[in-house]
Amino acid sequence: MSYIYVITSLTQFYRYIQPELEKYNIEMMMEYFDSNQQIQIKVITTESLKTQLLEYDHQNLGFYFLDKEQKINKHQIYDDEYCIYAIEGQGGRETENALEKITLRVISKTPDKNIKRFFSAIKRKLNQDENFAQGIQGDSRLYQQHYYLKSYVGEKVFKSDFYNDKAPALTPK
Image 1 (cartoon, helix red, strand yellow):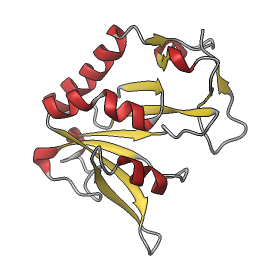
Image 2 (spheres, one colour; image 1 turned 135 degrees about the horizontal axis):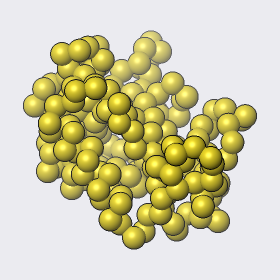
Image 3 (spheres, one colour; image 1 turned 180 degrees about the horizontal axis):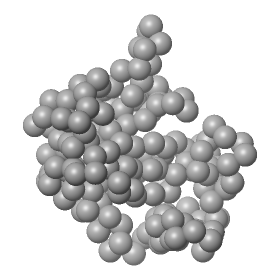
Image 4 (tube, helix red, strand yellow; image 1 turned 90 degrees about the vertical axis):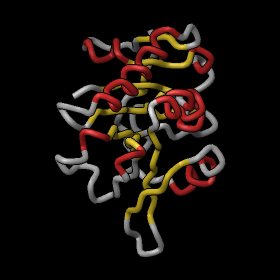
């Protein structure tokens, strides 16, 4: 499975990858609790993002990038037939003084080529953008694969999980 780790707000990340969403015909869907406390998913647009983020404030909620042509519903995302068209996301919450790491994961070991291209395009864009730096402190090779927006260094605390007080803060190299 492939992963991308980005330390930025979900709002900023959504705007950042907007051209790639359009180019590869991908939609972002975000989980929320309905009135019966059941998890549902809703398509995100630039206009609805702020409102949807208010409903996203729960540790078990995530988001997805799905191929628009497949018309995937929330019950199909992890099915073998449809997971090849999906990328799972977690994190991206923001407070006045902290940011939560965004984790993107290609669900399938054999993803559809359009999803693979979209995922690669995000990684390529992050690698080429001089506003982003790569690597946080830690011994594992995994820590070298984290991207963060340079402008947030010293301004916000980087966290791996907003809901786990024992999770260490992430420190840029």
